[in-house]
Image (cartoon, rainbow, N blue to C red; front, side, top):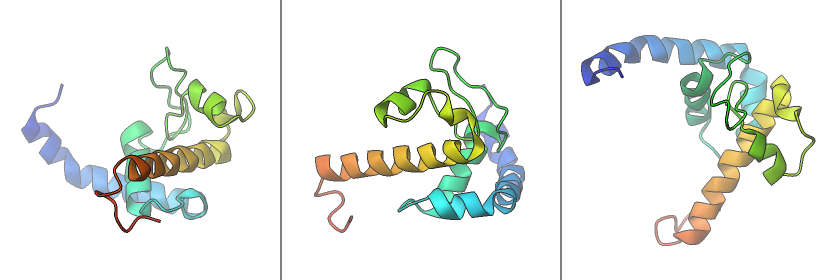
Length: 117
């Protein structure tokens, strides 16, 4: 586990890498961020996989891709099994998942999100 000092020291390089990831996949970020701020969407991709589609996360969840989409996400949104392994579907499912969760939170806590659409 990195110390706080190490985490703070890594911020400049992570910001640079986040910008590189955005440039590389700009069209997909623009297409699938939905209502999520695009900077947050890109930063999530950097945090999850450093922008690498070949990344594998928690094997017990079957996480794959840039956004580490779990196998259960395909089931939750009723899409074909294994589709999360495709680049565009990984972006699509991330956008759907994050925006759906934001809506669930807005419905659960309307006083915290009075202006949410």
